[in-house]
Image 1 (tube, rainbow, N blue to C red):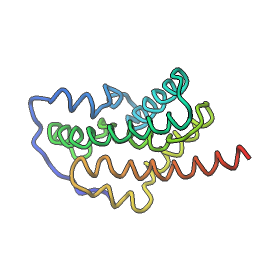
Image 2 (cartoon, rainbow, N blue to C red):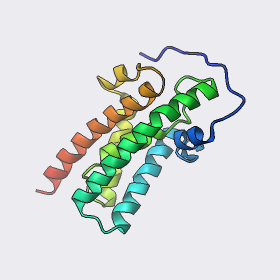
Image 3 (cartoon, rainbow, N blue to C red):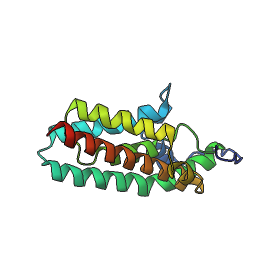
Image 4 (tube, rainbow, N blue to C red):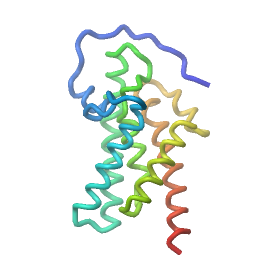
Length: 170
C-alpha cells in the first residue's frame, strides 16, 4: 500500500539547512536511485571513520549509534521542511532517512569491505521491501514517516548482519 498523495504548495524559498541535511549535502540529488546514493555516502563515511580513527569496535558502535540518533533528530524536521517546500510528499531527494537507517545497520559491524557491502545491500533490500511494521511506520505524518520506516529497515539489516557476522566468524 502506498502513502496517500498530499499536495503542498511548492515554496519559492528553500530553507538552506533543511535542504542540506535532507539531501545529505547533495547526495540526494544524484541519479539514478538517490536513496542508494544517500545510503552509500553514509556507509563510506562510516568506513572512513572506522578505518582512520583510533577507535575500538565498541567505541565505533557507540559513535555510529550517536550518528544515527543525530541524523534522526535533525532529519525529521529537515525532511518535514523539504517535503513542504518541494510541494511533494516523501520526495525522493530526501535521503537523510537512508543515512540514519544505514548507520543503524552498521552498528557494531566489522570495518571491512565485506561487512560494509553486506550491511549496505541488506539495508537497501529492507528499505525497498519495507516488511511489517516498516510499511506501517511510513504512514506517520510528514518527516516522521519519511525517517522512522528507514530506521526499522536499518534494525532488520542490523539483526541479520550481526547474525551473519557471528556465524561467519565462528
